[in-house]
Length: 471
Image (cartoon, rainbow, N blue to C red; front, side, top):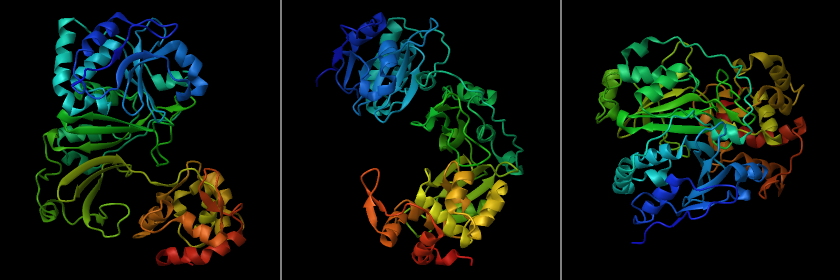
C-alpha cells in the first residue's frame, strides 16, 4: 500500500511552513494511505480563488491550505491576528466555513482522538494510525497552547460583530422534567438556549468535553456536536422555524445558534421515563406510558402510519419536547418545537397558494396575531396572497402555518417537496403552461398571483386539499 502524499517543502507566497507542520508531515509521509483516515494529500497550496471569489484576496493573504480531502474540501492554516496561533479552518466543498481547532497543535490532538468532526479523518478504519499519531505527539512533547476561540466563519464575514438584541427565552419546566434521570434532565435543560449561554458552555465543555460551535452561517445552518461515550449528540442551529427563536445575528452572514435538537442514546446510562433501551415491543412502552401520542410514516414519501411515538412537553409553553419513538427499536430525542419549511424562499407560486389557502380555511389564523386584519382581507379577496407573504412570512411558509387537521401538513409537505406523485410545480404547470425558469428548469407561466390566477388554479387545488377545505 502506498504512503500518504506529502508536499510541504515550500509555502505559498507570503507564508511560511510552521516547523511542527513540517515535522508531522515528514512522519505522515511514512504512514500507509488510509491508516490515518482519508485525505488526498498533505500539501501547502494557495486557497483557490474559486472557493470564494469575493474573499479570495484576504484568504490568500492570511491563510493557506495544507490538507486536501477527497470531497474537495480543504483544511487551512489561518492567521487570526492579535498574536494568536494559526488556527485550523475547514473550507468545505459546498461552501461550509468553520473552525476546526484554535491551533495546529490542537488540531493534531483532535485528529489523534478521532474528534475533528471531519468524517474522513475520524473514520473508524483509521483508529490504529491515530494511536500512532498520539504516540508521536507524546514523544515530541506537542501540547496545544492556550488560545481564544477563533470563529472562522465570522472572521471570513469581516468580523464586525452586530449587537445581539434577542432576549434570552425564559423556560418554566413542566412536571415531566422531574421524571427524567439527572443526565437527561441536564441535557433537556439547555434545549432552546443560545450557544453562548453559560449553562450551555458549561455542559458542552465541562460534561461532554467538547467545543461549543462559535456560530452558524447561511451556508452552514447547523453544527452537530457528538459525544458518543456519553450517549449524546447535539444540534446547534440558528434556523429554528419557531417565532420564539428568531435568528440572532453575529455578523452580517453569521449567527449565534441555539441548542435546537439532541439525540439521546443508550450510553447515556439511564432509562428515559422508565422505558428500557432494549424494549422489544410497542406494547411494552404503552404499558409504561399509555397509548402513543400518534403514528407517522417511516419516511416522508410514505402514507402508511406505522411508527408509534410518544410526545411530552418539557416546558409549560410547549417550546421544548421529549419524544420516544418505536420503530423496531427505541429512539429518544429532545427538540425545540418548530415547523418544516414548505417554501423557504417565497415566490409568486407561494403567494398564489396563500391566497387560495386563506379562502379555503387552510391557514391557522392564531399564528398571525400581528397580521390578522391582513389575513382577513386576503380571505375576503381584498388583498393578494403575496401581500400577506411579504409582510407576515419573512422566513417563508412553514407547515405550522397550516391549521391542525389530521394529514393536512403531511400532504402539504409532499406537495411542496415533490413526493409521492404530488408536486405544486407540476400542478401549476398543468394549469398555466410552462416556460424556462431562472435555474434552467421548467416553471409555471405565472407572473402575478391575481385572484383570476387563484380561481384558475382552484379546481385542481381543491382536488388536492378536498379533505380539509372549509368553505
